[in-house]
Length: 127
Image (cartoon, rainbow, N blue to C red; front, side, top):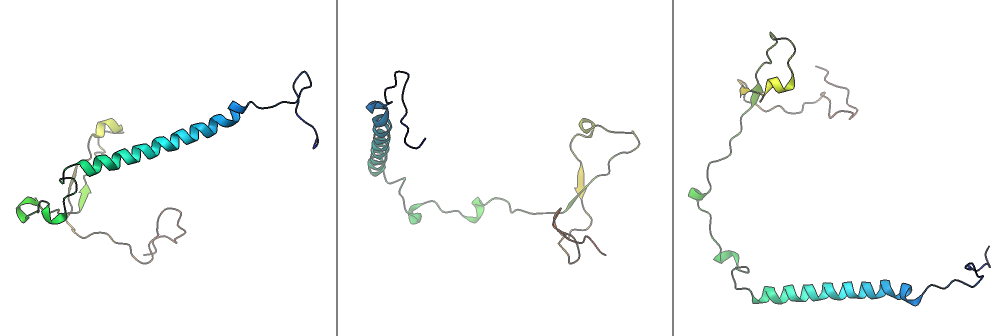
């Protein structure tokens, strides 16, 4: 198998045409030349644009306290109870989940002895 040559039906050695060997090279050179041309044109176009696109920070608009808008506030919300008097509810019967402001406005934090994420290997809540 090591010294065998590939042959066609007429027992002539197979040769790949030159065009098959050269075509990928020519295509690659054409693609590289096209990319170089596009980069040069975009740089030339960028140099010609007015200074608005290249304005420094000192020339730009300034944000004042009136322009900032309302401050972001957070509050702890808790869901309303699901009605159980009607029997089994389907998801489309629930609609949007109503919620209300929680009476305790502290954020839950991780505490020592509580488990981590699912499958993290923690021992779970112990107290």
